[in-house]
Length: 418
Image 1 (cartoon, rainbow, N blue to C red):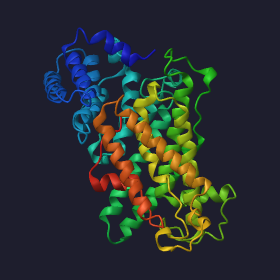
Image 2 (image 1 turned 90 degrees about the vertical axis):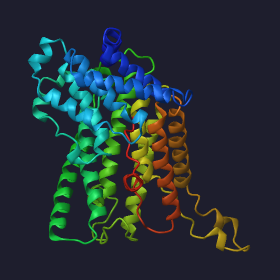
Image 3 (image 1 turned 180 degrees about the horizontal axis):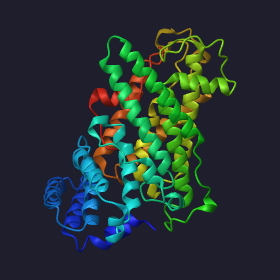
């Protein structure tokens, strides 16, 4: 059922390019247990790239090699995003018609959906001008409706959701980079913010309206480690992740949702800034924390050995900055010997306990991935998560906002989280 695995298994023995590529990926996956494979993996990768640059071989082999060499670049060097391979694959696909693919027995839609997932990951860690533009969505959608019910190895049943989350990533990263570079506000800055807010609103509406297929209407994966419900659960987690990023960076969107749901009185909502000490600010943060916990409970329901584990690190990292620990009203260190146990336990609310559990879940799952996935990008994921929580806890008594992407950008920790 997995066309990627099936195709590669069929071709690797007869394709020196794919053989070298797979060998380099295997070596990079084993460096935790066998550090001596580091140099071998890089050497095999170099040889594979040289073969690819010669451009000889069937288009299917070349495209598969671009996907694998680009997607595994961070396995060898966590700061290498494989951008040249992404752009090269996109240009290659754009230059070929559907008829050409069919003539050579290549699955056109398989490769385009693979690019959808890859672009989603890159949109959060690379600048917009570094990524070649997406293909025309209308052209991509034609003839693909039935494929929505056949799981793709990288997008599962979440092709449209991942495409929307990719757009969220491009918008959010552009906004955060602009926030870092603009010390002063200008009219053009304000106009850009208004434009971004309008785009964010459209994406929110789209993500909220998306529907995923029900289990009885889709084909079985025929993979006992990855039943259909794992993929459908992951699709819902992607949706929640995209919405949470929008609500965190564009709090007005969340205010509108809270008003619609009767949780916020619009007459009392006077302060909109993420660092505002107002009641609406606290309501936002509590709602986001609760929503993130729900999404993480979905992730927790998927067993560790699931074949979806390759696609989980991005979601886990993206939700980390919503796990806020409540600050106790009394500073235990300054409260003196007269402080009662009730004072000292005041910060341990049910939400605090749930947040602590979910932090433990994220860390334990990422730590487990160090032994089941290529370890170098996972180490960076752990760095982002741990530093985000350290800063959050340090600032818990203030209303200062902390966002995982800001932490990643400031430390230069961009990596492909897969």
